[in-house]
Image (cartoon, rainbow, N blue to C red):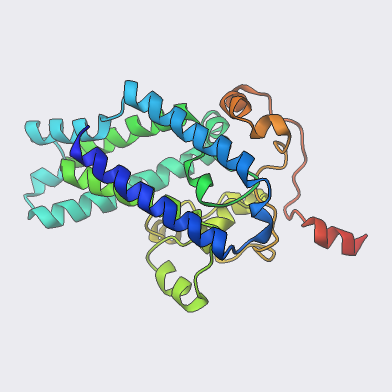
Amino acid sequence: MDHTVLFRLAVFAILLVVMGLWEVLVPYRRGDDQKRAGRWATNFALMICGAALSRFTIGAAMVFAASYAQGQGWGMLPWLGLPAPVAVLLAIVGLDCAVYWQHRFTHMFPVLWRFHRVHHVDPGFDVSTAVRFHPLEIAVSAVYKSCFVLILGADAWAVVIYETLLSSFALFNHGNVRLPNMLDQALRGLFVTPDMHRIHHSAVMDETNSNYGNILSVWDRIFASYREKAGEDDREMRIGLAEFRDRESQSLVGSLLLPFRRTPSVQQPRQTPHPRHADKDA
């Protein structure tokens, strides 16, 4: 196995254990630890399916694209003749902007949303949600990112560093944890935090369609998709998609078939009340 793959796997495994222990010992949302075993089984099975598909299809597409671009002298960065550290930094920033738009496109276009909604169907929010993606979305994402690697002329090491950062921030941002408010606000000025990304998984579609950032939070601010807070206490706000809360949608087979299912006709209010609040109003 390539040493860069081993490096990425090691970082991923360490962060997965750290975040898993953190949210088990000090969970922010107490309700999300219910039925954890079933959710984790489906989420990590999807991760394995995605890894297997990538392994036998386009697993090294981005690194190959970077090596090819470098060999051919393609891309914006080589043409600028920048020092290597600057070129690597700009490649990482450029790729993160491209992935921000990829994420936003998956919410804008129905055919892409059909696959991306597999990620949002999870009724809980924890580190396992970070790996819950349909394998075909992962494949399309690899092709999309490879195109931008060619456009930028990104160095292979820049790609490895970016992909490592991307998976690391995904685990961190989906953690069922909370940072001290002052630290969260300080970090949020530049980076995506769990409190910021949790809003993106709200069952309220106006909130789902916000905070698309992956590593850098600045893209949401620049492109007017930033939301500071959810409409209700994020300890109690409903997570997931209202129309796919059945057992079938939460299973591995159901998740794989979800993009091909007809969307149930469910009217979604702008603000979905939590059951606890509904009881008070009754």
